[in-house]
Image (cartoon, rainbow, N blue to C red; front, side, top):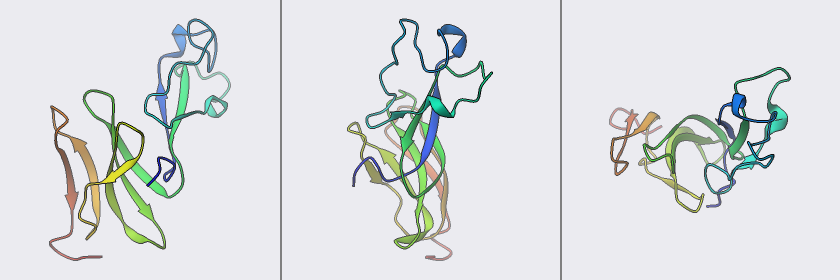
Length: 132
């Protein structure tokens, strides 16, 4: 599975420390927050002063509730790929930007969070009540 399977965006930085939208302190964009992220500063609204940079971190599918790990190196998120499966499943980004499914694939899943220490992820599921 490639890193380009979901759609979403994440903000990074504070615009008050930049020379304008999309420009870091030295006039260059910072490195992406996770592998495969694409700078999407064109989505920052004119007059917005709270964002220095905006990064698209997922591509395709339907996605929701992405949360950073405590070490800020990975995301935990819920994904639905209509046609492949209709219920949300939980995925975690790997160090190389690809995704790894961590939910069982049965029931509806939601609200995934890393546990302190980043070795485990907690999420809710209806799998014990129904498979779809």
